[in-house]
Length: 371
Length: 174
Image (cartoon, rainbow over all chains, first blue to last red; front, side, top):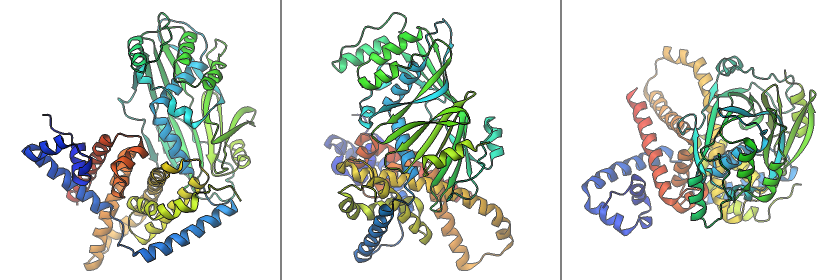
């Protein structure tokens, strides 16, 4: 029998009921697994010690604390003020961005935004020159197909996510990325102090369509795969974005209150099939909600490289609008709970976003005052 | 007054201590950190109050949100601490540190090492680690992080191994 993984051994330490009988029997009889188990147990104990919170509190104290905290929450919520957790919103969007389905959407949206260029080698099929929201519901995302079911997905940094790292100053951010950090002319009321700076490197992700894999996945799911157009098999689409810079101002609670980000706008290149075919085919795949596909299909482009970047916005969580920032059309996004807003636009190949726990008007004032 | 979900108070009373505990595991056990953990819980419940998170997912959602919010706060704090160190560091070297003060410094240093190590872990590992050590079952962690229960074991194991490695390196470099 194969040795159980260290993940299984880890569960033996603190939730043995979740481990199968054969695994238990193996571990009990296997000297090698026993040695590993000792190590796993020691690491788990060390972590438990390192993470242990301060001394125990009696239930009475904890109960009183909960009461006090509840009244505080009620007071904050009833004024509608407070500092809703922008970082929570960030976390939410980040976690769905990591879902494989979101990659499919990413490929689909960029594909949808492309023109109809056709060439044999790598060619630029898309360069974001404006932004427009595409609405979907949160449940749509969960239902999106996993792109690895249709082909090979690779990222430029061998499977790792693009690293975002902190730098000390606006100057350091510019040196690292070649992008000047936008200067805020006047901070909105309630936002003070110096920002912190982060930079992200250029990242790219490629998707190579495999007719064989798509057919196998469809068969496994009992779905009928639309006929694959000639030349689509083996076509690779490469998405590239960044580098970018981010400046964040914290509120008094230490949570982000205002963020200004600027980066090189996403571009896409392709080798292989004419782009309209790739787009239409991807949009016809089972799993992409019909209304989302319909919205994406309108991003036909006009054959030129400049295109509209569809910005996926969960319609059940946010509303969108349009605004003008220094003569450039911008998209505004406002969380339905009023907690967070953002303004996004592209100009000269750069994508800029201003976001925060502020009103759209306040953010627009910041956006228009950027230098 | 904004509309709040009707099950808020019940969920709050049930999970508040747990959520504060999650944040405290990330932020540490000093009095200052305890207050910060309470703040994180407030932020997280406020977001939850205005959200449409299904009731049966509430606990996992709250714990994941608390971990992320606390890790973000930690990052801000570490940057501030680094700046303060840069200012104070030179002075401390010139002062003789003895007795209890030296012990305190060691404890403080070790706590900071834990926070540093946590902040360096991949987010998913750090979150799985904190959630499991906060008492969520493998099944609860799996559902909150969209993992299989088996990969929860693997993820927690990797996090613990990396954490101990970091702490060992830290100890040997002193």
